Length: 252
Image (tube, rainbow, N blue to C red; front, side, top):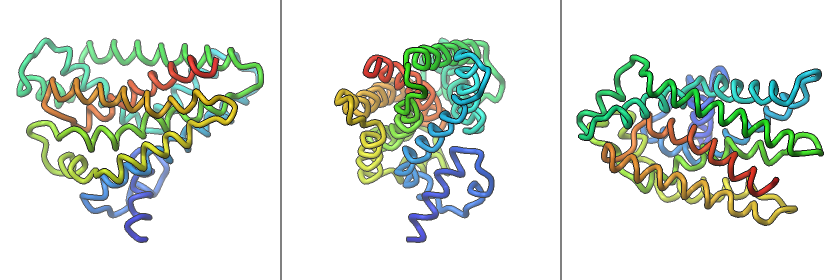
């Protein structure tokens, strides 16, 4: 029971800015095993979008921007950093793994990564706007499932794909400690959270986002031999936009 609580709290402390939880004394294997709770962290983030949608006197566009910024800050911009580093490396023109990884580790902000991230967040804001204005019954609660879907794919990808060459310490322990249990339960949670009794097509959400994560894992393995913390962060940001597209198609 102590392990379960520790891993649960670690998932929240690692993925969010909730104070105190990040100080949990976790074991190296807890980092990967905690991915089983990533969809729970995601739905928690998603539910915060509801009170944001109730802000009076604001246009849907402004609310969409606030939602996007909220998710960024609530997650400490952790995944945004991984997105920028990953795109800098993958689109740097380097072809060999040992040339791409140093670019990803470079702490300097690359122009390619910044432009890509900026463009991606513009697309995310537009999708928020389209969904909010497309619904006539107020806040669409299926929107809250988007962060859960995007974070739920981490366990599956970490289980299927190896750690990239040269990864050591917590990064290697994170991926090596993700097992079948984390992958399957995380997937089931994605399905439960995104399911809507009024729309049976919602059953497709979890499989489609999982497929997106598998494709992303294949790209990472081809580029650098596997997954890293940065590629997981990039995957969360990319799959969040993909999840919004899926929700838009299914529910609107």
